[in-house]
Amino acid sequence: MEYSTPRTMEIFSYHLIEAPVYGVAARVLSSSALRRVPGLRHAECLLPMKMGHAVASPGRYRFGSLVMFAFWEAEADLERLSWRRPLIACSLPHWHIRLRFYRRWGATRGSTTPRLTRSQESPKGLWSA
Image (cartoon, rainbow, N blue to C red; front, side, top):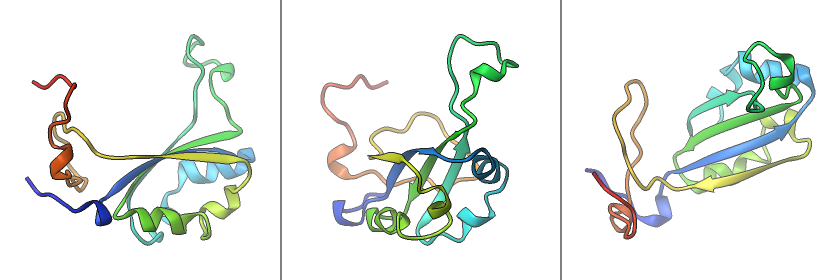
């Protein structure tokens, strides 16, 4: 298992962005602009949904918003994002939270696996299999 120091630790972020419908569509349908963001390893853009509505119902989806999950090489790369394109076009009201990688369940193909910090390998109080 590969470990990193806290100063260079990879980080995940969850962004909720209010944007015009055309801006949301451009981000969901095209990720080419995101590939040019330095330090961004992987990003997924999604539409937020309201639970309890039918899947085909227009009321289920919030077309004026965008959710983005991102995997960054370092926290400094996330800091620089707010001053750069491509998300400056969506820099209307938004917020984000920062997430650390604590546990690994299962495996995925086609993406880089993040490193665990030694102190976070087995946090106390969490069930482990």
